[in-house]
Image (cartoon, rainbow, N blue to C red):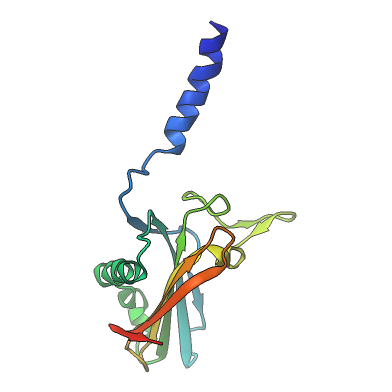
Length: 163
């Protein structure tokens, strides 16, 4: 009876923690992290969005392709249509899931425990930037170790690999 009382909660916790990790790659926007820098009357307005990639591919070209496909299927330019005519800059960041950045992470602005996206650069595995002035998308993809040290980096402009 005591064994059952101890093991059932541990089993249930293990089931809920591994929920959704079937090995399938999924991308979703991290809630409450979007930033718009600049105002409608300014020359340059920057939109920053942050995404989580669950089970990202190890292959950097494959990682770039899924990021590119996701952005094609979820265009962000429409979100800033009212600011057309200005130089709009779009910066999309893609992060891996980790102990420090779990899939349900939310920014924390509390007095003693500030936790923002910029504190998680070691989990950044891909980014893309483009603007109205330079519409060709630039992609950076990274292979990093658990501590966030870059093992390999690939940079693309459009579909062209840049060394």
